[in-house]
Image 1 (tube, rainbow over the protein chains, first blue to last red):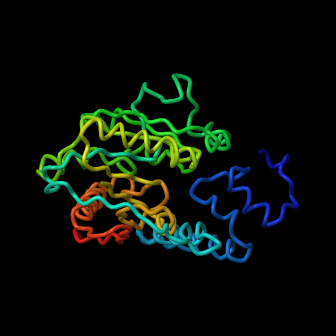
Image 2: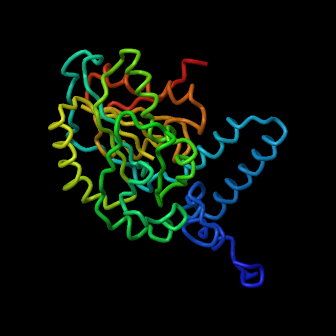
Image 3: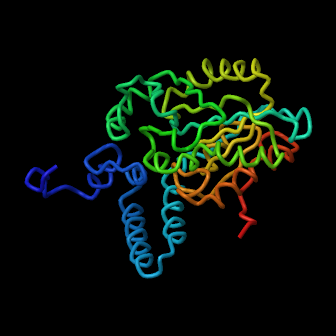
Length: 230
Length: 68
């Protein structure tokens, strides 16, 4: 939006809400839309102060901590979360080093050239305007062979800034680290690993799709799954 | 059996996942900062530890980096 087209009388509320898929859409700071004005103002001031500090010190960890704390506060539910009355639990069927593990990431990772939305699938930036379609859609698994290197992976996800995963897939899809740990004898790895886009119909995911994925893993003699949320 | 890695504890408290490792990382970098291989490996190793050591359902463990 040009300066001429931008309303000059916008309120602070409009400004903070614009981070949530609006004029200032930013997946790292979209939580500002959920905060009261005063809290959002404090967060912005604290982040800017941390940016200034980091410019002098180079201490990125301090800046990350400030943004992380803001994200945690920004996404806290309005009501306390009640755990389910029954939670499943399966103990290891054998020593861990004898178990076969598959990685499943919700980070929207897939192999370059194997876009789950087809060869003309949207870019990361284009996916943001499709957020509602994603949230109504049925999740699909992208299969990623165990020997796939990070250079052959990419990511797209309308719920977070997947450019991070494009730069370093291990930030949400740590298959290379699992290969190292398997080489050290910590675990055995399945032949196939999986990515999907977590911004999807949660009801379909839980009620329809995830049980099929579990059967898929059981059919391949997978003992354990490492799940990565984003 | 499964273990999850998540950066936001409240999300997992309501889901009923058997085992979860909570990391103090930004959204979209659940395993660790971009390019920080030492940190990422420590997180994955801790998740495997949790997979083998948790004794009951709904275990939520905060990641502690013991490699620094």
